Amino acid sequence: MANEATPAAKKPNALQKPLTPSADLAAIVGAGMLSRGEVVSKVWDYIRKHNLQKATDKRVIVADAHLKKIFGKDEVTMFEMNKYLAQHLK
Image 1 (cartoon, one colour):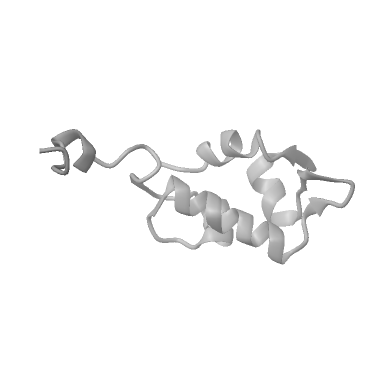
Image 2 (spheres, rainbow, N blue to C red):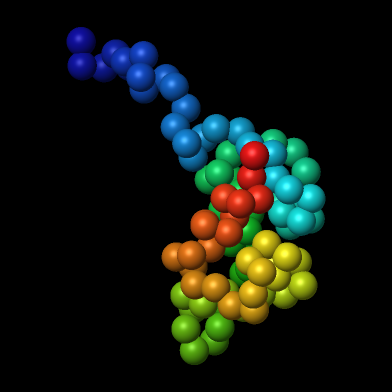
């Protein structure tokens, strides 16, 4: 039957696994356990809410005090953001 889910399909993938954010990341996304996908979504919400994208290149995120603790530098591209977020999730 093509509509039956396989056992492998029921297993959560890496983006769905609940993780605990570091204290620095929790200041942005909240202290509860979140999936990697939820963390990325909440960080993007924070970036948009605080207008932290470079006006001339929306792919560049300009870190405020909270994001600088996560990224360790003043600017990161949206492509390298996940690398820094991963270091703050367990």
